[in-house]
Length: 257
Image (cartoon, helix red, strand yellow):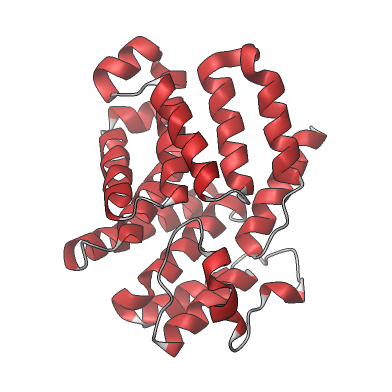
């Protein structure tokens, strides 16, 4: 398939040689992915951070289970931000979910096997409509995978973001009463999870974006000023790789609208 090119070409997103290890902790503060021993897996992650998403998927899958997280994150971020064909986007996200289910079966202690499963199903749900996804039972799978990711890695900021956003999305679509009774979704829990995410990863643009979106979904106009402040902060974040750059540009676009 043809992959849409990452539109920014800053050289600093290419972590050649020892630069990848040197910057790993900051690059992976959100997902707590351990630094890989295998040089081929390292190369897949280099491609991911540089925005060579197609190459990252190909290289990661070729490495087997050890490279799946690189491949899955690359495919999921690409699908969310750069893929313009809706059917292709959904196919990519479902492929990620399938690989994650293999990881869950064979390496169940891998937190990102659970987190990326939920991320892919969450973005897929938004593509087909959250209401339809809830009717298909995807909400329970997403919540379970995110809860498991946090149990395995309590400092997983991105899983906190996604679980907080889950509570907000459910409340937005079915209301607080049904959301609480049927799906266990609560405004207070969503708020706490998103606050915790920013404590764990203070440099996160996407944490601020999702927090802003969640505030509006859960509280409406009463939280609009706070949401606007969070978007301004997100737009001012300094991106360290391709994904973070896409997050920052998304915040800037939202402010411009």
